[in-house]
Amino acid sequence: MDEVQYTLTQDDFWHLQLNTFLRRQRRTVRLRLILLSVMLICLFIFLDHHFSGNYILSTFSLFVALFVALFIVLLFLGLSFLLMRLVASLCHKRAKKAGVHALTISEQGVQHSNEISNGTSSWQAYKAIEEDKHNIYFVIDRLGPISMSILIPKSAFESPSQAEHFIARARGYWQEQAG
Image (tube, rainbow, N blue to C red):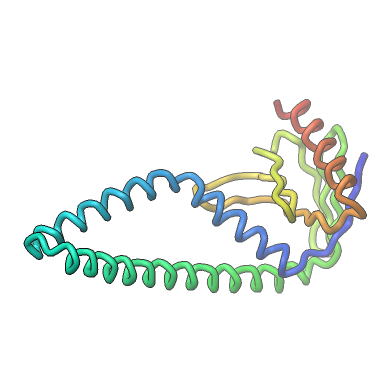
C-alpha cells in the first residue's frame, strides 16, 4: 500500500492544461503540416498566375500572406493560452477549498480523500495511468478533448525515484485488476 499527500497549486493545473492541449494537437500535426504545404503551393501558383509571371511580386505577396497568417495563428494561440491560464486559476481556487489530498493505492483500488470528499474506486474505473514531466494522471474518462483525471503532482514525492516507484506500483495494480 502506497500513499501520497499533496496540495494542488495553480502550476499543477497549468501543466494539466498544457498536457491536454499538447495531446490534442499531437494527433493532427501531420495532417496540418500537409494541409499547410498544399495551401502554400496553391497560394504561390495563384499569385504567380495573378501577377503574370512576376516572381518578385508574387513572392512578396506570398510573404505578406504568410505574415498575416502567422499573426492570426499567434493571436489565436495567445488567446488560447490566456484562456488556459484562466481555467487553471479557476480550478486552483476550487481546489483550495479541498485542502490537502491523500491518495492511497493498493491491490483493491484507489482511495482518494480530502476535506470535501472521501472515496474508494476499483482499478477498473480507470482508463489509463499517464504521466508527464510534472504530473501523474489517473485517467477516469476521456470525452474527446476533455479528460477527467485524478491529478497528482510529482513534486509531492521526496524524489523522482519515489514518484517512479509509485507510478510503477500503480500501473502494476491497474494492469492486474483492470486488464
